[in-house]
Image (tube, rainbow, N blue to C red; front, top):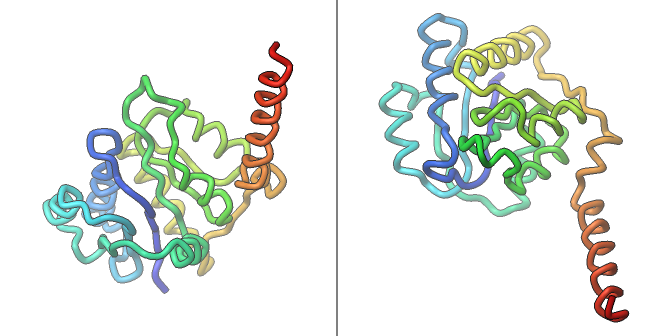
Length: 196
């Protein structure tokens, strides 16, 4: 009955901005676009006092909660059972190629991803588009639009569908990444051995 958005991992102060989604939620509540009894945004990871202060300032303590750290296996289960996974992009436009390892986990979870903040032309945006796994919303207006569509779909259908391209997603799995790394290391090792 509750539409759950989950964020798992660390929030890097000055690099990521969780207040954008908080402002979007506040606006949706004010415009009565969100049923607070059927919504939850949960942050899993190290307690962040700055985040908590923002949650309270925006009057969202009933909707948004920091749940603390969990073992990795539990985090993986939680990712797979969430309706939407929140990814906070890097806010520095000069650092478009940075994305956290949790992004790979999110892809593997086969749940829709909402990447907020940052820039629309990031590597994350390209992968989300290529795999069909989510949306990028760089500002509050865009976040509101994605959340409205997602919440409306959830209310209408009782779930939020996943339409990702499984074959494309597999290209970003840990297994494939490990294979690519092995190939690179093999080339380096053969280069060193031949002296060329």
